[in-house]
Image (cartoon, rainbow, N blue to C red; front, side, top):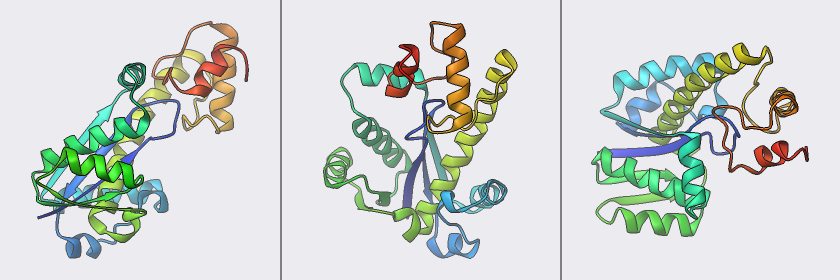
Length: 207
């Protein structure tokens, strides 16, 4: 059996970092025209999510919440180490002997193979474009994160009356939300990654 893994939410200042693994037949997943989640509209991702869950032999999802990310960063782990650990857990839980991974570089691939010595791992840059099983994992991870972000956006917007936006620090709506929050409070808002540099800069009034 062949597996594929991918993540969603590596960069945002708000919300969880989501990892997904999918085990399935490449040809069957190609037949429903899965592709990298970044190249699909939200509606298409939702439709593909349903089709993938029907066709996949197994799906595994791990979510690392902002407070967990902050705790891991405080313990000395960088983002690559956090991702390597999560991907290792996903691969072990999938239980297959061959897995495609979207590569973060040679050191990442080496660490992942050390963590999962019994699994043949092929880590390639843009694997989510090349392998349907990785594209499927990309879609699962993205939809799961989008659903969580919708709940976060609703909660925070109900609290403030201001749109949170996408949760990326480069998003103008997110910038407006953060400026307003920190002008009215000298604390971090819920669901934010406190260890992220933009969050610390807003708290200190430097953005």
